[in-house]
Length: 362
Image (cartoon, rainbow, N blue to C red; front, side, top):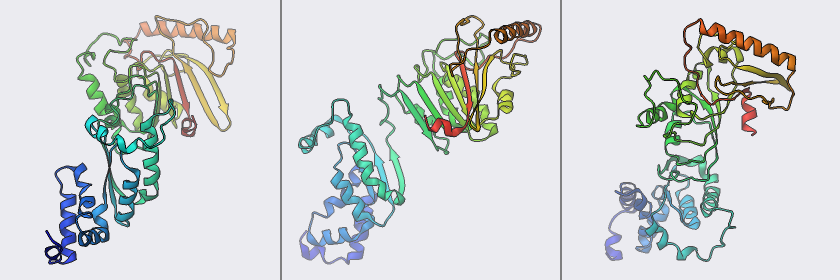
């Protein structure tokens, strides 16, 4: 097509055609390259493309993306809302762009090239986040995270926690924080756990095992911190127990102790702390204006003779003897009553109730 034929269409109509071709592409990734191709056809088309900001609003980030190209799209799309897509590339695509990145400084052996790439890209995007209209992340992006040991999810209020957790491949994850959390957040993860052939049947009358089931999505998880969005969100506890059965340390943020005891265990028995769980209170201390309550849970089959307070305090021997006698008395009363319901988190040893600000500063 020569320049004479190109100039027969009004610039406004040409701009609409360009926009339609860009945002109605069959492949989202190739669609984001349409405006770049158009701008290299002729001077006339380039002038129209550069003056059409809406043409550059679809931006795909796919390592190893070119930061300069992303910056160009961000500049040319202003002030229109932008749509970001972050996805991974195939080996073929990555190999194609390898030569273009050979001149760049290589990261330190202890650093990840992927981490450095993400950091530089989001540094470019940060000033333009006010224009962000949609953000799509490929579900395969986080499927292989063998070294991830700690994950903190803050501010997710769209009931997408299960989708996020199910997309993770993190067998070494040890520490998980979800703040806030609502009752429906773990529904999807619970269904996936219960549908596994290796998961115990919900109707099984056998007592819960103290070992982590083979199908646990996070077999190494031991520390779990939850911040219920409201009082009724405490009902998520049972689902959390089924999803994360190997947890040994559980922390709840912004929960009143009395209300927590009412929901945490409903076994109809009595114990030393009055919550009906057969636990032994370790400390009830003040930390400034924010109280922290610590409990240690004793297993009926395994007792520790040298358990200590988390804060390094030595328990009073007389008080310990009194608590032990009271605990034995409570167990005798339990035998005369109906068999209690299974206790959540069979491996749990430490329970913490604290202010939400404390977990964000960890």
